[in-house]
Length: 105
Image (tube, rainbow, N blue to C red; front, side, top):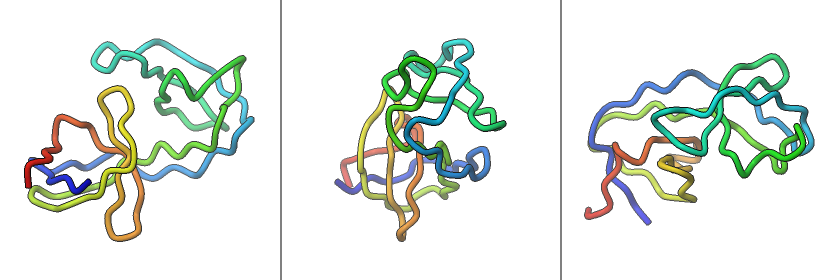
């Protein structure tokens, strides 16, 4: 499904791919996005969806990188996850908040 960006989004920088089984330390649940938790993975501080973690380890490969996008760009939806979307744009894959995406294009 194609989605249109409604406002510019800068993201919080690029992260490496963390492999399934990586140790993760969960922090507090995010107030704005339920089911997302602050965390530390391999020395990086970021956020992770609740269902990606069990017993202190990642259940799947995970890259928390958000895409930097401009208003009116088009992205392809890969997956929705608790108010965020994994999207693809020109072979780049990353996360965007759902509240900056519209589908009626």
